[in-house]
Amino acid sequence: MAEPILKWAGGKRQLLDELYARFPADYGRYHEPFLGGGAVFFDLEPADATVNDANPRLVNFYEQVRDRPDALVERLRSLDDPEADPDPDLPYAEETARGRSVESYYYQQRARFNRRPYEGEFDPLEEAALLLYLNRTCYNGLYRENADGGFNVPVGRYANPDWVQRDRIRAASRVLSDASLRNGDFAYVLDAAEPGDLVYFDPPYEPMSATASFTEYSAEGFDRADQTRLLEVASDLDAAGVSVVVSNSGVMYEPYAEAGFHVDVEDATRAINSDGDNRDAVDEIVATNVPPSDRRESGQSELPEF
Ligand SMILES: C[S@@+](CC[C@H](N)C(=O)[O-])C[C@H]1O[C@@H](n2cnc3c(N)ncnc32)[C@H](O)[C@@H]1O
Image (cartoon, rainbow, N blue to C red; front, side, top):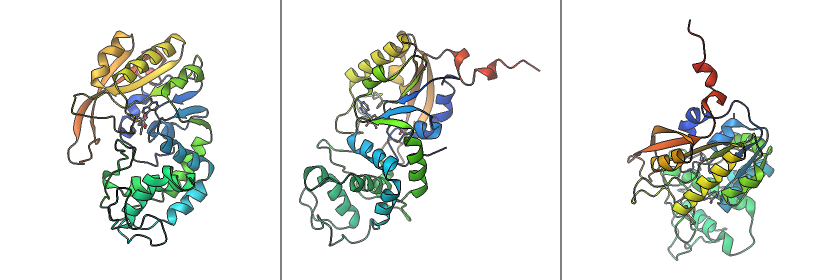
């Protein structure tokens, strides 16, 4: 059983049992088109899978984890404490991309991460190392990009931040080597999934209210039209004989129920705000086309009474 390496908004670790209870007892390949931190995928360790995310930096990270785990760990070990002084041998020691002076090692690395796609030679291993370093040392450990695609989270306060994560990287590398990894839109599953396969969709959640934005994973966002497109893809997969499980926020209850899915409400308290003390309780739904009798845990309700 592997574990997620990154802390990612919408991480599904608390919901694993609820999701697995709706998975079919048997299926062919496993597909996860919104991978994010990959809590389900890494826990499940499928023998044959496709995984995807629209965020290119996230997918580059997983490619490096899969192909060069030891080199990545070594690169992570070469990084310094976030509170240390900026490294005089590295570029961007003096100021951030916005021209503000850099006071600590953390802000120097953040500035390097944000400038990387635009100048110099692209080093995918360095980008992957910086993504994990910033994820483990930033405030509240939440990856967030501003409108320009910059990573803008301030430094966090940790007694002993551990950004190397050697064991998790090695375990994840093993699981990823059995999967095909993609960087694109979720709709690829219409071609990739065969009858009898299982698709688990964990999209950015449709906000419960206009003020609650759950869509800040990457600069692109995910709007109502994308939610509608996803429901259509889920319905097409259903018609093609593919098992589908979808998690989303409570506002999507009716659209999925009307499309003929079994929908259940989970009462989840999720730490999604940047302020760790202010946890929004939101209704979360799990929708599926898997009939109760075909589910993994269906045997339990059919136990004879003693
Ligand atoms: C809710 S998160 C997934 C969380 C993940 N299940 C976990 O446990 O960490 C949603 C992910 O969808 C990705 N995403 C956004 N729009 C997308 C699209 N159109 N196609 C595929 N992925 C997309 C985001 O980059 C984000 O990583």
